[in-house]
Image (cartoon, rainbow, N blue to C red; front, top):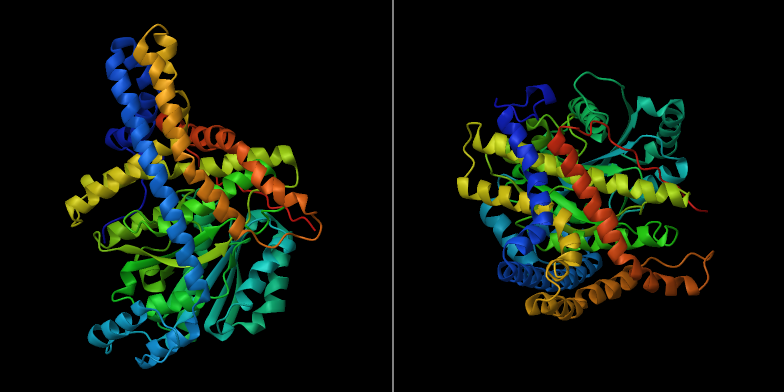
Length: 529
């Protein structure tokens, strides 16, 4: 079988290294381009500036529209009776009250194409892998409670508590105690310790959940459960699934024509501790939440991220997750994509998995931890070289057009992440400083200001939706805390440039220089009582 593993650093040839250098090289070129063009040709610079601003203007309006669309979709799916919809799917009937139109279309499609070769909702088992390192009981226990309190039969859930040996004896005792307390309520529950310092592994979540995945495969054999009946959801220790998540996942899994070639992506909402986190972190967390909403509406760019679900059959085919990268979630998309020669998709689950905003208890440490988290996410730029290597230089049957489009979108996404905020801030001012007496140079800042003013409507949409999605205010905070939830948006330029852009530039520059991030930087999670 063709290898889908990332080559080890010493195995990477000049071609692989060239594509590792590509994202950072493009980023630095774009950042310097306004200055270079300004020194060569002012009129050409003006065209570049206006074109860049117009692209950003259109994108910002599109993001605002997609945010509204995604929020509306999520709200609708949270109100659906998924138990009734699954009952209809089980019996291939249409009796669920107030069912959406797509439900009737799904029933007809399943009857026509899947009736004799399908997994019924009653046959589905959910395996939930909860990964932990050094988290406290106050962080992990609410996650188990959220799983148990979901509107789904816990006797159809297999709980795997995957913890790290390097986390010390405390995390081992905690996981064992939690399984002892909550395990009997599930169909099956087990703790699995991931040994430290396994050769060939980076220090990260991928090794932990892959080790647990191999044990899960044996558990299913012992329980005589077929892998085709099992869908696996991976959760971090602070992830709280929506009460209807498992019902919606069951329905989508059972109504998918080829579920083995599909993974399922819920919406990451960083709201668990949003009232406690410092203001800059709240702005970043809210922005990340609504970007997740936006991506749920753009199926052509939707990828595995953070908590996601995948059929056990597909995980076995890919030998679970990669143990050689710190971004095992997004990378899993590309592993499966190349394993199945491009016959692979990600379907959205329009329900949230509630997660923590970055908060360590110390303001200074929180600021640092936020940067490290974003840098880790931005390390997804390392997949540019992987896609090129497996797609263009390794024999495969992936459709060329689809591969090229996906490669370019992935590359453009990471370059935009690193450059867009900084260029927007400075692009119209550079020609003015280089040519202060030029009429064109003096007009560009005014044009930019007008476009930015109109484009601010996108931020107002995010502000409105963020207030709508806030969990109830904890009693320990007075009413004026709500006012700060609005005022906090003055931090947006600061967080966008100092955190998002700088973290992405840092990751891409490290990749250019071959200074690989080989250790998953653990984000401490504090709980305010």
